[in-house]
Amino acid sequence: MKKNNYNRFWRWHFYASLFIMPLLITLTLSGIGYLFYTNVENKIYDHLFFGKSEKAEHLTIDEGIQHATDKFPDYSLSKVIILDDPYNKRLTLTNNDGDQKYVFLDSNNELVGSQNANYTFSNVMRNIHSSLFVGGTVVNYLVELAACWAIFLMISGIYMTFKGKILKKKKEESKRQKNRKWHALLGTIITIPMIVIIFTGLPWSAFMGNFIYSASQNHPSIGTPILQQQPPTSDMSEIPWATRKNETPTSEHSHAHHGDMGNMPGMLDHEHMLNVEQLMSKVEKEHISKPYSIVYPTSQEGVYTVSKGSNTGVTGLDVSPYDEMTSYFDQYSGKLISKVSYDDYGILAKWFTWGIPLHEGHLFGWPNKLINLTVCLAFLFVIFWGVKTWLSRQRKKTFSPPPKTSHNVSIGFIILMVLLGIVMPLFGISLIVVAIIEVILYLIRRQKTS
Image (cartoon, rainbow, N blue to C red; front, side):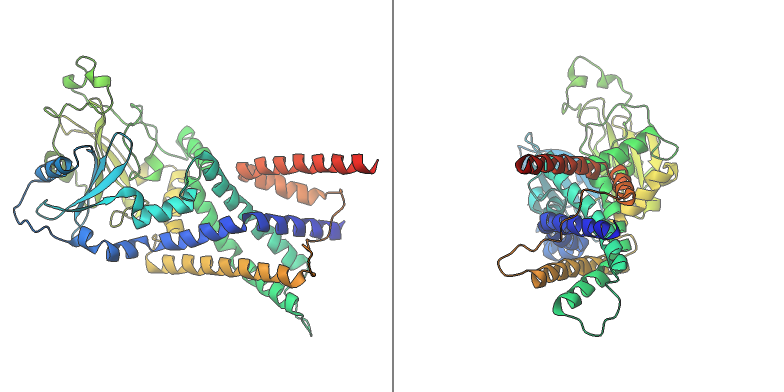
């Protein structure tokens, strides 16, 4: 039974590796790229981030915004990002199709230039890493499933390493044994940090991410505080993870309710709402320091959302988890309606507020990046030596899979798989699918032999 258990782990480890290896390599390489997106963008977008317009006239920020919207008439302002010096201000303009442009204003609020949001370095790396740049629910689930199975690969690899005494010194070792030892040694060393990296990335995933967020929202004592307010309609990508789906308050003003206009998304009462310069003055009075983002209201009942996040994905915008906050300002009076800060989070929200920057490599500066880079490179070498081990085992013109196992399954193996399925629900669903396929194949073989 013990040998059968070892072989079962070996076969599952082998076939799982074979099917998800291309995905794991893609995710690891794109993850490495995303680790250094701020460093890359500071260089390649230097003229946009820090450059000056040829025009020297000083404009108000609202005049600068007006020039930007005049230049791109099919787009409307959805977000303003105010960064610390020497960074320029960044506007996000969105059209009716959901396409976005980033427009940069210098210290005089003159236009410096613009970007197509889809093709910035950070967005390309993030889209490849999270959805293979294809997008869609199926692809998102596939990426998450690969991450879940990577956890199984680590655990099964540890089991085989110690059960098979792979690291034990031998007098004479074949080429295959040497490759297997390197594969096992590196895999053992990086198992814990790799599992930490994977699990701290799962809050952004499609299936488990929503599950975690629902738990956080449904249990405020361990998650995020509940705000009894109108659901948000703004684009929330710069709002901290812990408050991203919180319900936002509504502005209290008679102009927000006249006629049918107040219920029409995108129809703003520009005559009565605060402009950005006035709002920035209100923000300063509330002692909210740079950097922060301003998300525009999308209806006459909406609010200005001003936030500071530790995982924004915007160069120059990230802050310490302790400094995270999301505040809501009445779009007409500028009154601060409510504010949620890090101290208001429950333990689950706090955990992931630290975990996501750790995953992205900027929680504690360069050491964080270098540790993540080392783990990712080691993981690529683990894959490389795994392939070498298989190739050195292959007999000529044969697939050379691990030996077959009997139909007897140990209780330990079942318990492990059930526990992993509970912790990672999508992995659990995939196990059910694998079990169904196994049963079908078994019945087909049995029918052929009868």
